[in-house]
Image (tube, rainbow over all chains, first blue to last red; front, side, top):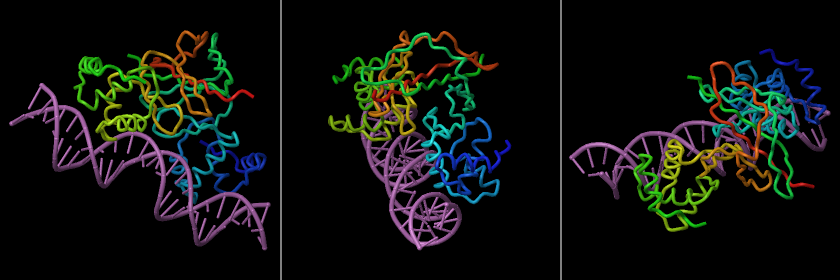
Length: 137
Length: 137
DNA sequence: TTCCTTGCAAAACTTTTGCATTAAA
DNA sequence: TTTAATGCAAAAGTTTTGCAAGGAA
């Protein structure tokens, strides 16, 4: 997967008020190159094998920072670890139970004809939908 | 919350092919007394403060065993820890982002008028829906 | 006796944090 | 120069595992 142009990432970070350090730009460049789902460990491994000098702490700190600024979205799909989704537009997910793969499901392919009213004093902040998949027999 | 009659739990476990040991019956008795969502740590604390002699390892082993037999369901709602749901009938959840509380949403209160076809070679194994709630302003 | 279960401690894993060093503005 | 970010190691939190001891059949 081609990393996104570092210059574009730099601008995007600066636009969010995030100081575009070398490590942050590399993470952004990797993650924002296409819609994808990566774990912190995967990001660390990919950057290091590409020759980057970066620590685990910085990866976690940066991912949390990006998520807080809405650049990425943190998913809780299986209990094992967090997945970071570079697609922050509203969408849902297929989750292949065998491979663990996550596949984006665009909003228009799901339609709710009925939803429960939120409890009094609350409003809906978001809807997470995960469609679990198994191999067809 | 009243624990369910231990005798009924014993029968239920035996019916699943699970040997009804003292610790397992206590966990079942606590968890299956009503539809609820508990963490392993909460279960351990409640049983111990009720005078039970039980270890953390046994709580985890037992919860995994129960989940494997379909007696309970493990939820991934926030990344922090697993929640064990004593309601194994199909249903969805509200998740209060402020308090962390989980509230069951019965199946009939949600209706899908459109769902995406599962990718070739796969079929839908289940649908997890979490409606995140924030305080209304 | 034989097999399974438990408890304890240690290990495994993911994520966070403290602090000295380094880089950015 | 001043402030913020990084790296490392250690800590924290959750869950799993190895193994000796205990309990059920």
